[in-house]
Structures are given as C-alpha cells and as structure tokens.
Image (spheres, rainbow, N blue to C red):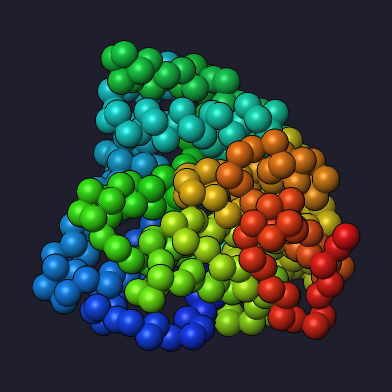
Length: 344
C-alpha cells in the first residue's frame, strides 16, 4: 500500500498587484494546530500585531482543547466516553454541535458528526490507513446517527443516547474557530487580515489599497501552487473539500478522506473538489463537505437555495461549475488553466 497523505494547504493564496498603499508591513505567525498548519497574518503595527496574534493562537489552542475528541478531557472526549449520561460542556461546544446538526438536517444525514467510528475504521489521517472489510463497514455505519445526540441548551449538557456513537468535529471545527477569530478582529477594529487554518481561508477586510484579495482555487489534479483560476473577495471565507487533500492509494485506487456515512466508503461521485465562498467560515466548512457528498446537481441546488453563498465545483472531467452569483458577475472568477472549461 502506497502512502500518499498530504497535509497541505489546498487553496493557494495569490498576492497579485502588490499593495501600492501600505500602512504597515504584514506580520505573520504560524504553528501546527488542529492537525494542520495554521497561519495568521495581520496588517497592523508590529507590536500590536504580535499581541493580537498571541491572543488568537491562545484562542485556537483553547478551542482545540474543547472540540478535539483526541484530547483527553476535552468536551467532545468526555461526551464520547459517557454514553447515556448528560455531560456538562461549554456554551460554544453546544453551539458547534447544534450547527453540525443543522448541516445533517439539510443533507438528510450525509453530513454527520457522529461519524467517529467510521473515521477510526478507515484511519486515513494516520500513518497506517487500510481498506476495511465489508462487515466492519456495516458495523460502523450502525454507529452513526446524529439524532442520537441530545442537546440541553438550558443546562448546557450533551448526551449520547446510543452506545458506539462517537462525535467527530473534524468537518466543521476549523470553520467554527475561524469565525471566533473573525469576531475578535472585529472587536479590535482591525482593517486587514488573512486567516488560514489549514486551507480554511478568511480574507478579512481588503488589501491596504482597498482592492479585493485575489485567491487561487487549487487544481485538484495538480500540485500545491497549481490553480485553475482566481476569485476576488473581501470579508469572505473560502473553504474547499476535495479528493486530493488527505488520501491513500491501494491497488491503483485512491481512497480520500470524505466518507459517506450512508455507504461507509469515500464518496465516489464525479466531483473532484468543491469550494464554498460565504461570510461565515462555519457555513463554508460545513457546506463544502455537505455539497461534495450531495454531488454536483443536488449540491449546487442547495447552494442556490442559500443566501450569500457561492460555489465553485470542479468535476473529474475538468469542468468548472459556477453558482449564479459568480456567473452573473456579482463575484469575479477568472479561469486561468487551459486544461479546464467553464460549464454552461
């Protein structure tokens, strides 16, 4: 089995047309958190930026210590370890689970944070992933059901009502944490910032000359830094789910990390990647997985039903599908890779 796990940033940020007006040089700090590289950039004076960056990285660590099921004593770990028992958790843990359930409901269960048993079975994020036996897959599927998660918002408790259920916030946590950082930036009245939590991007404000950020959309069949085109945004998040970010290969078949809780296998539709662009990074994160699992037709239909949400979907035959707001020019997208064509 050939191991091809890439923990890479899959949307390449392009600084085209360098700012002609700069109040301050960018101050950037990065660290390995949330099982990925987190890189934050502020455009304030150096002293202020360093103080704020310290605050923001502390917030990320605190959130990871609440939401990661792999950290002993976290809210999620305690919920998973106490089946049938109401577990007291933080208000934001209640909130992230509630938002996850929303995506489960609009996808008829294709997005499901109770997918932990299936994630563990495939073990794609580890050094030793494997193709499980069918009977193992069948058993894991039986342990997935978001309806078994009981929230008591008044008392701030969460109860798992069925044995075997394991909550995993991996498909939404980075987006949720990003939104918490954005709230901090707004409180501090920051003008410009770039937040990159392992490919979950938030372009805060605009470049110092007032122009939009130009963001490259990754070529799902290329290498890091190879992109199909650029999109121009301000105060928006871009999150992509694709077949190329985390995967392994066996017998010439690629098994990626986007697992379908209904089949128990990596989703095998015609999509290669889905990029969701919207103001809320939580929404972008949840929808990127949801729409990928729904597939091109149903996924794009869902996007069109939601206000303020745009999508760029790339199929395996190298066609690019754009949501209506991008098609009609409300958001500018420029195709730059001649191997791809924009579908009509």
